[in-house]
View: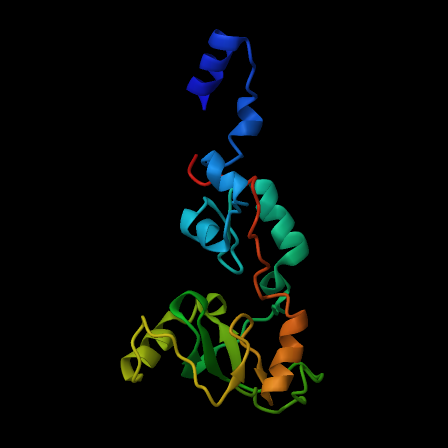
Length: 202
């Protein structure tokens, strides 16, 4: 882009704004005339350096990442507890390698003195489905699960008989219930198709 700017000024006294232009993909005119638009696949393959710590989507600028986390990332809103809970075992898994959820059995009982997410005081914690990023302190339990699992780490684990949101991991009772949920699920990535201001290795 610097060479183009220098040549434009030398040949025709035309000033190209390199700061703005570097954020515009350079494509052939016939592609633009045909309605060229950056696709979500283009953006995913670009693997930008600013990565969301919650959903792993990448962005070309810090500002884009900040807006995503603040306004759009449903995974950033997933409830986290200040109290730590100890994993007893992991019994099942769902999803692809880059968005894995695990079914977790927890040690202990509710000793908080109040009901927590429907678990009464003194009752054992029920199993829950958790995203892999919540289990960074339970590496041994995750490894033990895979040692005994019929699946491999590279498998996408899903069942046609289940109505599960692939983005947030929620299980619904029916296909219609899943459709209703997905209309408002903020963990489903929004489309970025058509954005001309995304850097694609230019």
